[in-house]
Image (cartoon, rainbow over all chains, first blue to last red):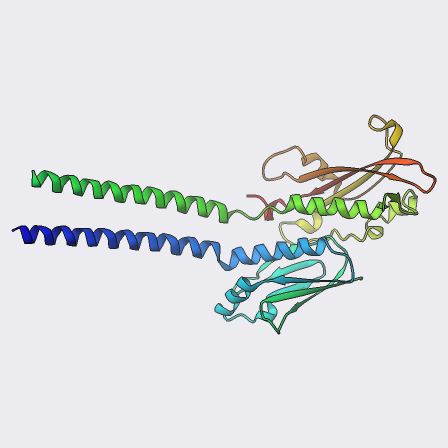
Length: 131
Length: 171
């Protein structure tokens, strides 16, 4: 009888702990999926790049570490060299095939070329020149 | 006694899971509401616009040549290297999402006097939404600086920069 009772208590505790762990894991997965989602990264980098360009003067080069976005694009089988596009004064960041990415405009009237750094494969660099 | 203890343990575990669900619900709600909203970058953008305007009219404490002229007023955007075109969403192209105004005052009678010279560009309707809250609000920023011209006359300059872009910065 005593043995059975002890066995029951142990099983109940294990189930209790396992359920708690499952619950916390699901919660953490939700948090990570939200914080590192492609949509959030697209918006973050489009706005960041637009603001960086606004703060520059012609004949400058900006290096921007985009490791997390590049990794995300690779996971989504999207070419890293096509993540950032600049059309006129609109920056578009796209990390997946579906969707049109996220666009944000800058007010600085300069010519900007966005280039993927093929050496370290973690960065994009932007060459700012006069129009 | 043993029966009662078991019953109590079960009730505690039920409460435990209830608490877990409440905590998880609160976390999901907070994370969703935080990441569901766009990053509001208009304050930085308006600041950069004001900086750009300041650099356009003044350099090293001195007024740039040709600033207080009709030509500068007419070609304000080009002269300051600005481009107020935006992406074509939410009817932004037609509306205009930026406004920039520079007012020059005589330093000796500032504030309280009328401006000696003004130049502006962009959508001036945005000024009306400056003090509003909600979906149509714009971010408005006022900055001031002082500068000398070549003759040594001192000017007070007021820069007003407004950025709307509400749909992509506020929800």
